[in-house]
Each structure stands twice: as structure tokens, then as C-alpha cells.
Image 1 (cartoon, rainbow, N blue to C red):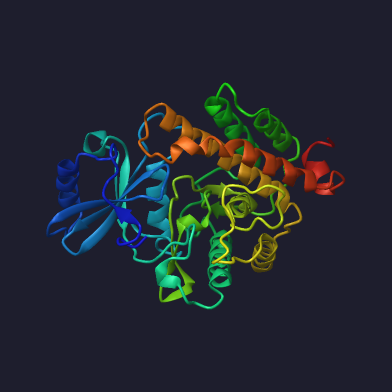
Image 2: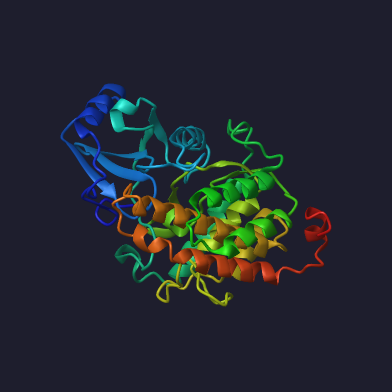
Length: 365
């Protein structure tokens, strides 16, 4: 997320009322001096994230995307609240500075947080990290370790015991994402996506623990220290954070993990031959060791993560098709939906139907 590699000129159609925003922030945040400049972080495909510079001070502003917003998505108030608490106890959580629900300022709710310099690892190894031995192992294990530490936090001790309702969490997740698919489904939508929703509803695992969930875990939302890539500097994008089964979070991590060795069809992220992350199996074993959780149904959570990603990609594609987003990447996202559905289906097929946990959670189906 360094300003030299991750931020660029604001994309066409993504400009806000910058004079009004500048005036508002100068009146609310002490110490904002010097010239005001704006860049946009260009890798995100949903929320709009900007780098604001006041002299030598850099801040980050986040607001929802333009257009129709799915219920419960892109919740800036939630993200501000989570970061205002976690920023005190969880080192990778950036500190939130200000929340605004006056839509005359930026056209929607928005919040401002501290900016942290560092690098993210996406489709290629960043120049700052070239030459590190075993880089993939280093960043992969650091990411999994940070997630395990997040899931070990006591929500009550963090002041977040009312962030969500842990009871019935997985049931609501399945029902909620099923509803999102119904709203986003195109006329030629994949029937397999409908079938998957039914299969998830009939085979839900029993939760083992209640944790604070990030709810959108992937390497692109993780920032590393360029001088020590074994150190996670920040985790971003907390607008869907909640309380619930931590394995739903870990399933999202697996779904985005850049390792296609153990799947018959490539999914949302291609393996990076230069990075060489640990395998999904190694990541799963490390997470199990750090948390003490039973990962015997990791395939169910991984499949659910892929199904969720497919729905998100359909939503982003729909915003592009309706003219609510000028990001050209949205044009191709719809084609990923059936691919992700196939991989989710394959993962569910690897689950043993005789699993006692599967039988108990599905009512004997």
C-alpha cells in the first residue's frame, strides 16, 4: 500500500467533492497542515479507497462504491468502529481517526484512518521484496499467523462483544449469501450456484469457537514490512467484520490462496510461480497448530468461501454492467462465477458423507 506502487491518479468517475472533504477534515482532525493532494488506491474492486496528503501527513479515506449496495455490505460505520477498538490491541489493525455519516460531504458514509507504508503481494512479487530467500513461505506463514492471533482475541476484552450474534452465525451466513445471489443472479446465471446454496444449507458444521472475524481474508488485504516480510504491517478492509465461527474466515483465506495444486480447476487466484506460497495443506496445518481447532471440515469452509467470492464477483460485474462502476475489471468478473462454482462443487465432493459432524449438522441428510 505504498503510495509509489499502490496509488495513482483518481480513476475517471471516482472523484468526490474534494474541496468540501478537505475543509471538513481540516475542521475535524487536528494538525492537518500544508497542501492537500489526492490519489486513489487502484487495486480494490469494491470500496473506494483514497490516499489523502496534507503536507507531509498521509491519511486514508474509505467510502462504499457507487450504485446499488447489497444489504449489509460496505458498512463504513462498522469498519470504523472495529478499527477504533482493534487498533488498540491488534497490531495489524490500522487506527481509525474519524467517521462521518453526513452524505453532503462525500456522498455517503465514510471514515478516515491512519496510513501505513508497506507492500502488498498480489499477482507478482513486489520489487521491494525481490531477493528475499523463501519469500513465499515467509509471507504465507506471517499471514496465517496474524489471522490465528486475530481469532484468539477475546471479543469482550476488545469492546466488541456486541459486534455480531454468534448464535446461528453460519445459518445466517448461508441464508444471507443465498439472498445476495438471488438479488445478483443474471438471467443466464449458473444453476450450480443455486444448488450449492442448498447443499451448504443442508450440511453446516457445528462451530467450535466464537471469534472476531475479518470476513474478507486474502493476501491483497494484507500489508508486509518491506524490511522484514515476516512482519504483517496491516490488515485492510474490515467493513464486513463480525463475530462468529473463525473457520468461515479461514475458508475465505483458503479460497483466495494462490495454490492450485490440490484442485482440478483453477479458481479466483492463479498460483504465482515466483512467490511459491506454502500449499493450502501446509497453511491449514499451521492454522490448526496455532489455534487448536479441528480442521477436518476445511473443505466445506473452503467451498463456502469460493461460493461467496463468486457472488461478490457477480455483484461487481453487475455494477459495471449497469454503469455504476467505471472500473474495467468488472467486465470480466462475471466469467469467473461458473469457474468458482465448479471448484466449490469439487470441494464439497471431497467431503465424506459419513462424517459424524456432517450428519449431525445436516439433520441426518
